[in-house]
Image 1 (cartoon, rainbow, N blue to C red):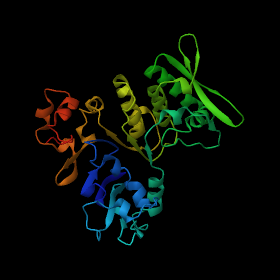
Image 2 (cartoon, one colour; image 1 turned 135 degrees about the vertical axis):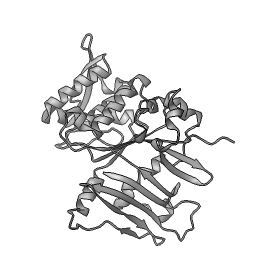
Image 3 (cartoon, rainbow, N blue to C red; image 1 turned 180 degrees about the horizontal axis):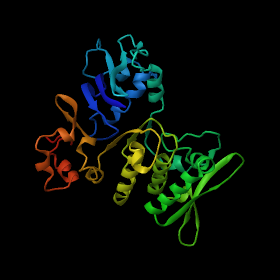
Image 4 (cartoon, rainbow, N blue to C red; image 1 turned 180 degrees about the vertical axis):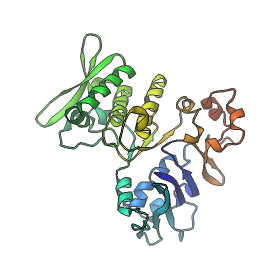
Length: 332
């Protein structure tokens, strides 16, 4: 698991550390580095064509280095690994080699390479796709039809559980179906609970399509090692947010759902007080991004002084929205 990420001169993040857990909900105003922080894994792997001028903080001296360092925990031992981009724009990887404790840089790279940043798009989700042996869900939700079709064929019990959960989330639907609009193409439909009418993906609402993408991820037998969701509440009715939370928890805490796979490290960003409300009992899972004249810094909600007293008389979302906790746009 990634325990923390330290950024220096990385866009809006001048010198800050982001604490992480199995699940982390990151809240804060626009421009506070929430989305930027999710790009840390790409930077460390060097899987980006950007040079120094694209990454360095505007206020930083152009002689400055851009660096991202991860604190990595494996089998109870801690390591620090990361990357530095120098003025010459050369990329230097500081990942350690395997040592006597059994740590493997290759295993770390494999872990990081499987990460995904998801920001769903309704048109991409609904589009027909080409079939393939091992389809992957795109970061915009594209290829969903192929992923669901493969799940039905390879893991029918998971596909049935997904259908049951779909009906619990959205009782008007009882099943996912498929059709072949042309040779080598696949698309999905949903069937109504009453009358068993078939609705094509392109006729479904944005919220239903986003919910299906979340369910597909939650029921994958081998999901990515690290999953980042940009505003998972977007397009979702507030009443469904508790189900979105459940899908993210199924990824992060599989043992609580009878799953035997390894946990997925989940990071999500939000501006929604309704989603934030659902984590009132887990302040250690919430990180607030503060932005002021001194720049950006991150703080776990659980480290706020007098937190119990602050939260005693109001929902967490209302308290955050009021500005008492910070992490809101500055006012003149």
